[in-house]
Length: 281
Ligand SMILES: [Zn+2]
Ligand SMILES: [Zn+2]
Image 1 (cartoon, rainbow, N blue to C red):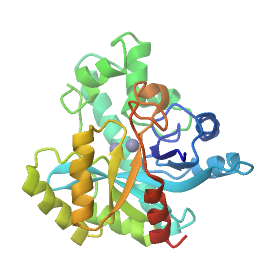
Image 2 (spheres, rainbow, N blue to C red; image 1 turned 45 degrees about the vertical axis):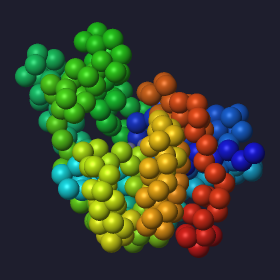
Image 3 (cartoon, rainbow, N blue to C red; image 1 turned 90 degrees about the horizontal axis):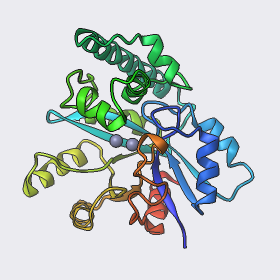
């Protein structure tokens, strides 16, 4: 049986495993097709590709980008990205700088709450220099302000936390253009359709398709069977590609297992065949 996981993060964004360590784990878990989808960066991919050189494991170059759509944050996955596309890399650099601005704003809020953490402290918590909220969480844990990541997000860093700052991100349409400009396929990550009723989700999906969306991440690590079948219905209705993955972050999201999600993840091999064909492979 083929095992497939098309949504994973490494230490180049907010995962705990280096690309090499992730490839080793994927091999141990019997995974045949893996996509690394780090946030805002493809910089972990050369190392990962090198690590798969003598393996039968297929690695799909990919990325996950945040965007806004009708006042909501939506994540867009891009598969089969051309890594050496210089325009795409320049766009990513701009995105990463807004990430740092946001961290600085969060640190300012924490300061006003009596918690002093410097940008340097956060950078030290990241092995690769890419920083995100989980790295602030690590500093909060190390200094005993919170017990664990969950508490760090609940109290301070999550959307209901006291130090939460929203990041200004491009519109979904623009992000999808970036992906297609770089030869990639834009897919909506973990479609929760939060705040949309059934018919509104279909309308939103139609709008996204009109803007360039090519598929939905139907098989997601934490989705219930009901949620999967809802997204499956949308994918069929709009004749979209489907993908699936665990959204593995290693020890930073310990309840999500590579290739398995919370245990029941199964990504059908046909999904990858269609994705490959759409990308021209
Ligand atoms: Zn996401
Ligand atoms: Zn993700």
